Every structure is written in C-alpha cells, then in structure tokens.
Image (cartoon, rainbow, N blue to C red; front, side):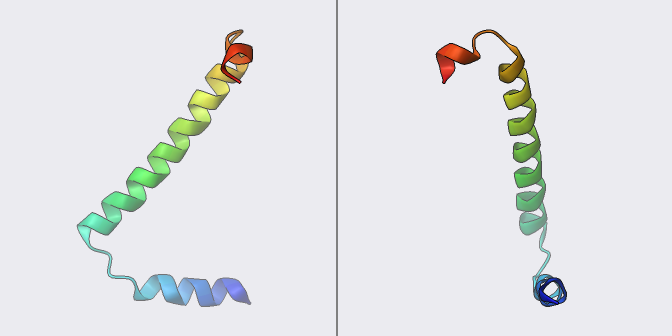
Length: 50
C-alpha cells in the first residue's frame, strides 16, 4: 500500500521545466553509469582501476 502514497506525493510535485530536466538528467546519468561500468567490466584495464 506504500506505493499508492508515494504516487500521490509525486502528483503534488510542481512539474516545472527545471524539475523535468533534473529528472531526465538523473536518468541519463544513471544510464551512462551502467554503460561505463559494463565497458570497464569487460576491458582488461578494470583490474588496475579497482
């Protein structure tokens, strides 16, 4: 039942262009992190990084 409360709180947010840009940026940065982690995970240089 907690998901319904979170959804109601999200509906109260003022979806300004700046807020939308922040959400999009966070999603894109998270996706870029996953891609970079996958690239470095398959490369042989990952041992020196960690």
